[in-house]
Amino acid sequence: MGDLESKPSVPVVINPTISASKENEANPDDNATPSHLSILSKLHAGYFTISLSLGAQALLWKNLSGHKEDSQAPWHTYCVLPSMAFLLLWGLALLTLATLSFLYILRCFFHFNIVKKEFLHHIGVNYMYAPWISWLLMLQSAPKIVPRALYYQVLCWIFSIPILLLDVKLYGQWFTTKKRFLSVVANPISQISVMANLVAAQAIAQLGWKESAVLLFSIAMAHYLVVFVTLYQHPVISNSFPTMLRPAYFLFFATPSMASLAWKSISGTFVTSSKMLFFLSLFLFMSLACRPALFRKSMKKLTVAWWVYSFPLTFLVLASAEYAHEVKGSIAPAFMLVLSILSVLVFIGLILLTASKPRGYCIQY
Image (cartoon, rainbow, N blue to C red; front, top):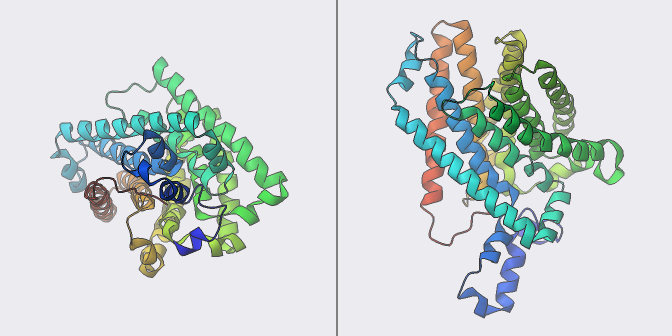
């Protein structure tokens, strides 16, 4: 926290409550009755990682329950779960996302200058993709949804077009603006922008629009290679990456997991390319799992950044489930089951930790 407070340009996105706390010290009378405006000033796009995790978990439960006819043991673990549990999870995810979206819209009206600074920040702009990813996941995980229905097509494009617009803005900066070159602004959270294109590609592929899906997939993978290589070279910005945001390193294996799922939706089967991406994701996950010391400092205090632990694990489980369903055998399904249990435990743990915080506690960056 000391590093963050010493940099005046960062608090807008990384710790938006710093400026609010200074205002409260200057006006102590305002602390007696918390204003709805203070809540809006503390809210930022990073909070959508909560709804992203909920949506990913709902999609996992839906996909696994769709394999009930499979005779392998891991699938039967999910058969015993009542369908009501999935409906409650999906309803909670929808309620959370709708609430966050409504509050963020109000934030845009009442605190437009803060939103503008967040949009221009090299870390905060990547979180702008999170709401659209969350809505696409909610759309795909919705119960009894018909992918070819007109309403599904309309909603899919409504949630996908903003991603393309953000691509033009963000990737254009990396390519043309000297102060915004990727080598200058690269950070692990940059991978969220890549994930957004992959999630959109998967959703559009389910509509049968393969060409549009390939377009989004191509944009995503081209920039993923650039981002991955840049981050591997440890640019200067990595030295100043906030310690409390280190859970974002889990995004390293979330992106190839999502890419394997997107390509499976495009090709129709879990082909060799999807398997290669899954193996890359698995290798990166093991590399991070063997280095717990990297996350020690970020675990000292609960922040909303902890939710980044959840959805990358869920995407890895989704990819491993497709792989297990493709190769059959016994090892792959058993390994998928272990990852599934780990994902669910992390998800439940985050919910309990978040709910156990005292009233008025602000989970922040």
